[in-house]
Image (cartoon, rainbow, N blue to C red):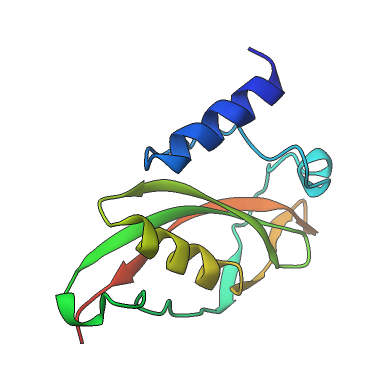
Length: 129
C-alpha cells in the first residue's frame, strides 16, 4: 500500500471515529514530516498547556474521559500536527482536544544536544466541573 493510500485510509477511519495511530500514516502535506526522523535522546517538555473547552451543548452532561493524542513537535517546540491515538468520547471532544493541543508549546526534544523534532502521546482529560 502506498503512502497516499495509507493517508486516505487513515482519514476515512478517523472520520468514522476509529483511531489511526500508525506512524507510517501521517500527513504528506506538511513538509516538516519530511525533515523529521523523530529520533531523540531527551524528550520534549511542555511549557504551555492549553485546557480544552467543553464542546457546546455538552456542558451539562457531566461527561468524563480522556482523548489521547500523538503530538508532533518541531525543533522549536511548536506542535505542527496532532493525531488521535485513542478515546471513548464523542467526536466533539476529540476536536476540542485537538484544538487545544495545537496551542501547546514545548522545550524541544534534544538529539546529541541539539533541538530536534519529536512526537509524544499525551492524554487530554475532560472532567465535570
